[in-house]
Image 1 (spheres, rainbow, N blue to C red):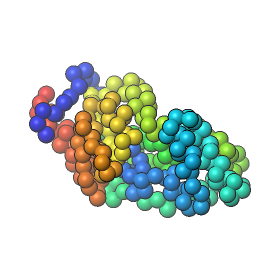
Image 2 (image 1 turned 90 degrees about the vertical axis):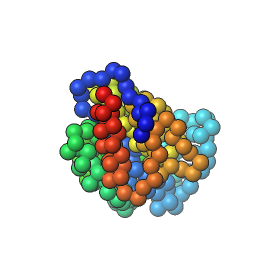
Image 3 (image 1 turned 180 degrees about the vertical axis):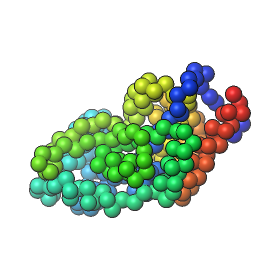
Image 4 (image 1 turned 45 degrees about the vertical axis):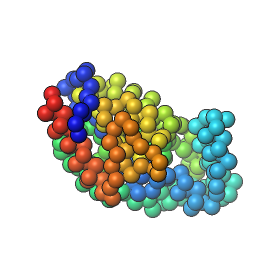
Length: 230
């Protein structure tokens, strides 16, 4: 950990830890894809339209939701939540977040996944603050509309808003894919956990692990190294 970079504009605010959700706090790499598979649909065409810039993220979400409705007809919020409940926490998630809370960190989820799953994981881990995407409903029935609060390719927008709100002493982001790079770019430190093949986090740390407690250990090592430098 030689030549560890650090911010020059420090305050006495609690340090912020930004967690991606899918593949970091949960074992499933994509809660959206998990739902598509369980509901028997494919969003490949929608994804290609989004990837090539032909539709924005809200329209991408709307089209995905409509795939479910076209396949199943009316679908309840409870039915979606029951499927999401099948998604397991990443091993060590509860223990890691407990440790980080005890050590004085403020923990935030920033996910392009679904708020319903993020809220569940937030309750289970005690995460302080949650930003994810909302599917609209009426009377417990899913509507073909949404609120796209987190574009997975522009998490830096949400992260910057949170940083401006708190002015933390320093910040660390944890993700698992190239989509997290813009988030990595705006935090003081970054950890890419179990990277997608071929992706390297060139401005931070790469971590291969099967237990999130190892990520918490790395965060504490960053803090300790930082204290020694300062």
